Length: 502
Image (spheres, one colour):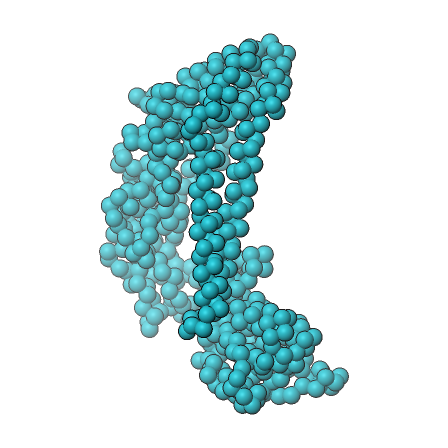
């Protein structure tokens, strides 16, 4: 079977006339048949080696499905000489390759000419990039805005190269700065601002989705709202093809030296004073968060709320005009699966820790008590968290398997359905199943560990011996270590604290 490979990037189609249709027509004439397999990468840069259609072609050649490849020009395979040589050598191991625009014999002279053509194509690509980059820089230096950065508060006038204030959105920007710099009593920080915007149904820039803390932070850090817009700030060279590259091969964005930035005046939405005040507050928050917390919580990672199912974490909070350590199921993060109980559960950390430690101390003084308690808990008809999750994930895996079977039936049926879409769905299905299977293995291992009573008795005995060696005089860290060995989970239901051992 003959395979035709076609690639065109947007800029090439516009400037050089490398249309998909034109390449297909010329390649079919070269192949002298229309009974071909078509591999089309439309709108993808030749600097990227891992392209969807090219990857499929290479795979089909390996499987013997394609014995001959027809391509318009070597620079359609790749814009970099080293990539051209890699691809063409790989193809010629199992198939032949022909080009519409030139024939290259497998002779020293032919290979030299082939490599010269590749080097010229790479040079031409670099010159195009250089000219385009220079054109953008010159436009910016003339005070024009080169591209739309989709900032909240502005519309982009492409024809005149400028930002125009969008009043409705500009008021949202001003509101965010005002809530941060002069917060009312019910607003405390960026996360609280995001919650408030969501509660008031204030739309985001894209008018869909929800506000997040990081979006609020990005707005507060954006100096452009003062009328100072920096262009040529970031080096994004070769980033266009990142979506087709593996994570380790992606090109990272890089900050250019300050002297290369081009400052352009744009309409201001807030004053410099407002912006600087926000920066001072952000710096104060950063300094505070970077300091290591002096407050410790003995039950970290052990507690869960029975009512809402959230993990319970420690925090330092104001209560009746006094600060105290406390445990709560409340989650401040926007987009959290559950925000916690309403009203929020807030228990004094000192009381809960003393209650739990007193119970554990009794177990350490009389290990038989914990063994009896453990056996009673394990005989309970209520499924554990792990068991419930295992059942749920098994249901999801079964649904994925049924869906995969249906996709295979569609793939083999003679229907007018894109095989690319089916392949993509099969791949997504497979990746999702792998993730679920990994979670399932971890949960099953944890569930099995929870059921090994003999090992637990030995562990408890070791913990008791360690406790008696210290004569009950343990540091905070030593108490915490013993708790993690003995206690499986602490379920808090209002004021009731239930301790479950392994």
